Amino acid sequence: MYLFIRGTAAVHPVNGNVTANGILTHLSDRVNYENRGRELAWLSSGVTEKDGTATSTRAGRRVTLRDVARVAGVSHQTVSRAINGKSEIDPETQRRVLDVARELRYRPSRFGRGLVQPDVVTIGLVVPDVVNPFYPEFVAGVIQAAGGRDWQVVIASTENDPSRELALLRSLGRQVDAIVGYFSHTDDELEPYVAGVPLVIVDGGLDSTTHALVRVDTQVGVRAGLLHLIERGHRRIGMIDCFSTCDPLVRRQTFLDVARAHRLPVDERWVVLGEQSMAGGASAFEALRAAHPDMTGVLAFNDIVAIGAFQATRKLGVAVPAECALVGFDGLSIGELIDPPLTTIHLDKRRLGELAVNQVDRLLAGELPPPAVLSPHLLVRATT
Image 1 (tube, rainbow, N blue to C red):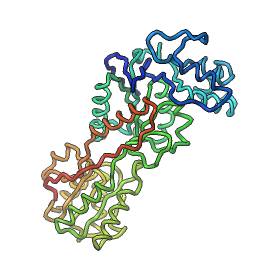
Image 2 (image 1 turned 90 degrees about the vertical axis):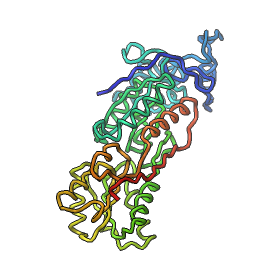
Image 3 (image 1 turned 30 degrees about the horizontal axis):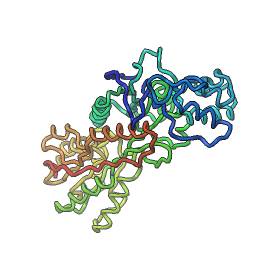
Image 4 (image 1 turned 180 degrees about the vertical axis):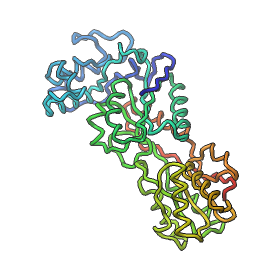
């Protein structure tokens, strides 16, 4: 299910080029295929006919399905089948058609779909979970940054199921001009489903040479949290880690590296893997406490897990922070609701959304920008 947020209709100039139906129509990249050169030069020249008649108000006109068919040397029905992933088309023909579509920056028309207005850029936003309180703030940042450009946002959720990513990417990609989202697949896995749609991957665990990236500097955050506990005099510190496609093992490895550098009497046995939930945090804390009753501090994967660990301290009669200090990660506002309030590694989630939209802007301008990196910072409350 999608949540569609409609903005104000407007034509948005991107570095001097004008968007048509939210799609950048100017072709800044020349294609070095001799048999396509003349067609591509014509399509990027801003004419409506091959006789040189100029378009009325735009630097270039919208590339159509028939343009792709002409350059690829196939019928428009074949182009439609290739773009929609129909099984009856030859794989080599599909590859050739998709290559041409990417070169022309062809986007399927969204008129008649009843979803968006002409001349408005629409971003598709994919998040893993709309219930986790981390994501609403991130979504709000995307909406605010998009609204400042008179863009629209369509929101979809994978419901924490990576197997849904590709199908969702394909279906959403037919309705939007660019996509921002959390994806765990490689470039090669994503490519058949992207179909030329500009893509910004948020906090992905893998590098990309094809798509724009927005990253959280998790290492900085973990290091800040652990050093804070060390400065408070703690030596026997445990960690509750969780599986994450965004930064697999980064928290764990950073924790162990810092622990070794400061000669803490801890090793891999002081890191427990739990589920990303309050119940998972509670179970992980109980396991750590059982294995290491002398433990005096815990660094949790995120605030939700930390609050679960806090609940476990109440159950076990462990005083916080007198007997065991707790540090979360993300800086969620719910951390202020427990007593004592949770010390955390604060991440500006709205800024993360803003950075993602900035990356979209640059992609639509024809750039492949370097990764945008957001660093968290320590927010000391009362659990340490």
